[in-house]
Length: 248
Image (cartoon, rainbow, N blue to C red):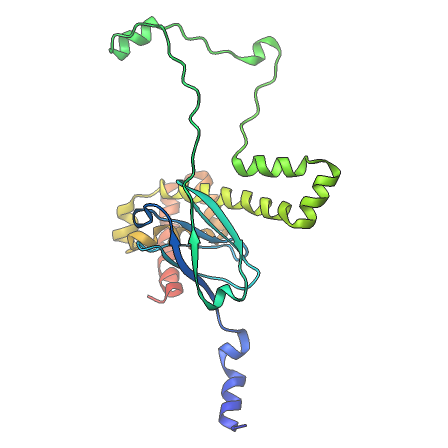
């Protein structure tokens, strides 16, 4: 073997640490050109979004769990294989059909004047504690309901869910749901003008930037406390590291 080639391989970063691999392809769904899909690698806790034509790419290794999620589409999760890393993949998403709650019509005649109608309506708010009943527990999210069902399926059902990996998958789904809610709250804490103009984040990379920031432990604390000034200062410090990460 050529001595120069041997030493190049020996001290090459790729030889030492391995080359980063990506899971990429194209998303097919109705109105994908006007929709941004959140693409999250649950195993590595990193996120990305698709381009306007549905093309996407996210760092991943074989065995990683990746989920595609958006408000109007059903979530789609898959386990990355070695073959998927070697080709362009096709991801098909289907619209989420939400059932509307029951609407009850009232026999009260309304005038159209909100102030007047409000005075003429008798509103009674029932407090269960007034008759010795406990307050109703907050309703569970979809991921929480699925996890609760899996955990309460009886000894045999619980064993099957644990051995099949479904229990672990549902736990990751619940964690992703919490992360998605955190990102949504973070977006509402700062203006798009600040992100686009002051931080120079491209419009279609805003979610990607916030997912990048979410890997910092300070992110959750700042968002939960809703401290906007400290959060803006935090995002400002993340601009340069993010640009370096994206190699811009």
